[in-house]
Every structure is written in structure tokens, then in C-alpha cells.
Image (cartoon, rainbow, N blue to C red; front, side, top):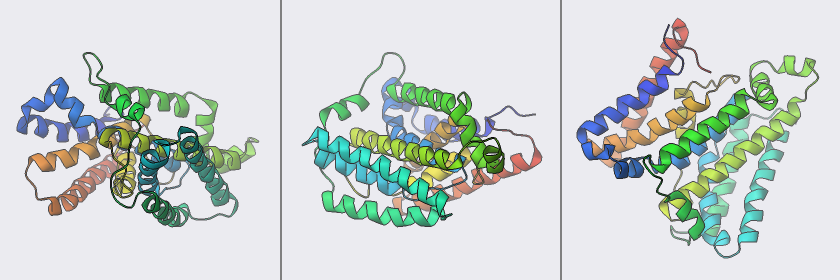
Length: 307
């Protein structure tokens, strides 16, 4: 039997090896730092999506929310830290309210979050009509940190995978999250509240989306409502590549991180291969489909199992 999580590792190696062959200097400290910088915000967005998919829901507004957060960071947070912090925390509360409504009213999360995506974009373009803004120095400095020996993005994503692993697989709350996604009736029969799980899970979705937006603002030093427009689909693909399931209950923190890295590196590989920009989206989609097909075949054959 193949080892657990082998598919996300194979996926990232299949992308990283050609990059190393085409651009050997990329494998240096500075090269990896530059190569993986953009993976940090996408990894956080993928973790946010992972929490939603863990309970069998999907958030189609993550990319728009990430763009809004960059605008809040560049317009409000840079001028008034207190007001900016209140605005960001308000987004978490809104997400918790959305989670409550989805559960109580049995609303389809895809439709609700698609509607939210227009709200986030409208607010973002009002705050920042064109790319620009003034990202606070402490955010920029945080993501420009040069750690010794190992590039900061690798340390950041490794720590993130460990923290999320402890939440999902080594805590009572994590058991409830996976239980609600896998067998909600059993959770109710055990005397637990699925409503509370939904509220707190959507709070985590909002929190990690906000962290993704702050990371993206810090890495790019810019605010732009449309900067993360691909994050929604990339985050879904990253979770699935990492072993997540749309039906809920099955997720992998390490797999989600590796899936996000794979999605980031695919774009870099296509650029190094001199694929025209207007062809890159199609090529990325084709690569995602191939990886997902292989994942489904391996799962159906019983040769792979995710944790």
C-alpha cells in the first residue's frame, strides 16, 4: 500500500523538479525564498477552504474576501490601526453569522458565498478603486523576514501545517469538525451542537482568509480588490489535491499546504516554460484535472488514504 499523503508530495515534486531543471538557481536560498513567497497567502486561503470543506461546505467568496482584506490593510489599517483591526474582526463575526444562517436555514453555502463575493468586491473597489494603497510596514517586514539556513516561507508553511494538524486531529474541537462533516447525526446523538460547530468553523474560515489577505498585502506591498480573484478555485483545488473531500469529514493539513504550494508552482513552471499568459489559465486547469483524476483513481482503488 502506498504511504499516506503520497499524492500531494508527488504533485509538488512533479512541478518542482522541472522548475529546478529549467532554472537551477531557483534551488538556492534566495531562489526558494522568492519562489515560495506567493505560496504563503495561498496556503492560508487553502486552509480556510479546508475548514469549510471539512464540514461539507464550500466557500466561493474566499478570493474576493482576500482582495478586500488587502484593501482594508492598504487604506484603513495604514491610517488607523484600531479602526482597521475592528474592520477585520467584523469580517470574522460576519462569517460566523453566515455559518449560523447556513445551518439554521439549510442554505446552500455555494450560493450564499457567491452572493457574498459580490459584496466583498463592491466594498473593496469602493475603498481602493485602483491597485495601490499603503501597506503598513510591520506587515511587509513580517513577510520579508530572512531566517537563517531555511527560507522563511518553508518555516512558515511547516509551522502552519503543524498548528492546523493539532487543531483538526489532536483536539476535541477537531473531532467535532470532522464528525459534523462525516456523520452529523452521530454528533447530535452524542449530545453535541452542530450549530456551534458551524459558527466556529466559519469563524475560522473568515480568520484564515483575513490572514491570507494580510500575507498577500505584505508579500506584494499593494492593495487590489482583484488581486486574489483566482484564490477561490485554487484553494478548492489545493484542498482536493491534498486529500480533502467535498462531502466533508476528510481533510489533511499537510496535504492542503502541499496542494497550495503545487498550485503556486504550476504558474511559475508555465512561466519558465514560456507559455503565453493567455494560455496559462487553460494549462493550469488541465494540470489540475489530471492530478484530480489520478487522485480519484487511487482513492477508488484503495491504494491511498489521507489523514
